[in-house]
Length: 248
Image (cartoon, rainbow, N blue to C red; front, side):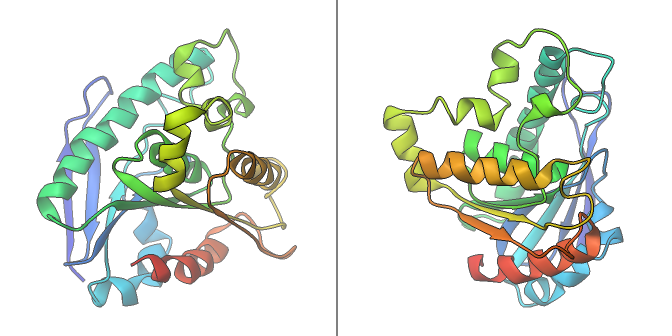
């Protein structure tokens, strides 16, 4: 399997960000790590191996990115609004620097897929909803989609609003909502076992997002796995290997 690693400047953040590409051909899939994760986390936890048949057959190319959660949602020393402002710098790094590399590397490959587990599921859903011109499918595993749940404090302004899918999606209407309906397809996957409720809130948050997407008429899937399915990598490997093949 071809593997290439590069460092990309990340304006507004504290260091360059790492991007790792796996594969030689296929539909691009942008992969977000779990909380505080780095680009190589997907490989180290067997997720790349779980998708090796798709990669080797030239059906997908994985583009795994760093998180900068230590500057944004995981930094409890700063207010919610400041975390959100910094997060928008991270979001721009993904949609500008990372997507530019992907377009050069995979010309004509079509719209991008995005995926992630735990906090990575939030990133995947948000980047698709906020940049539906680039991303049309998001496979979200064991996510919580409301940043106000994450030990936040302080007044919330525009940056907090526009980085919270539960807020801005609830407010979506008119032509923009019609456009989202025509473009995006979220897949929400979650278990009912250990850590999916406490402390992550992933199960209730996933069900809440399902209700909101249904209310807004946005086509999507909800896939709730069993009571033995925990908030852990072995299950995420099974889930991504189950869902991704039909999109590539």
